[in-house]
Length: 86
Image 1 (cartoon, rainbow, N blue to C red):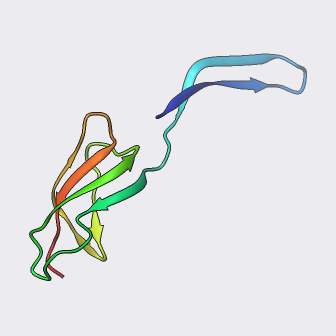
Image 2 (cartoon, rainbow, N blue to C red):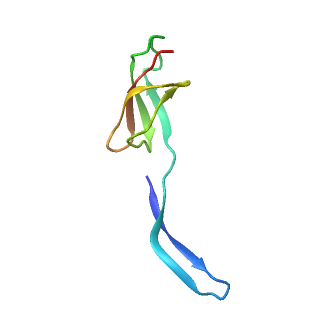
Image 3 (cartoon, rainbow, N blue to C red):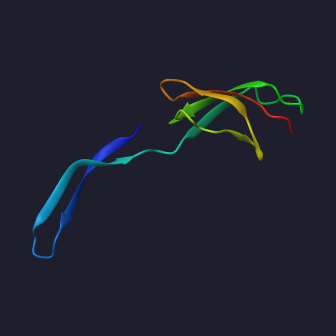
C-alpha cells in the first residue's frame, strides 16, 4: 500500500515551507506464491502469482521472455498471465 507524506523545507534562518501530502511512496511488488510451478516448454500455461503491491500495467518475465495476457486483481494481490515459450 502506498502512503503520502508532507515535504518540509527549512532555511538556515529557521523559516519553513510545508507542502502537505506532496510525496507518495509506493512499495515494490512482493511475490509470495506461483501456481502452477511448471509447464511445457511450448508455453501457454495459465499462471497465477500471489503477493502484494501489483499494479495494472505490470509486466512478468519468465527468465528473459515476457508473459502474455497479464491481468492484475483490483486489490493488487493476484496477477494472472500466460507463460511464454522457452
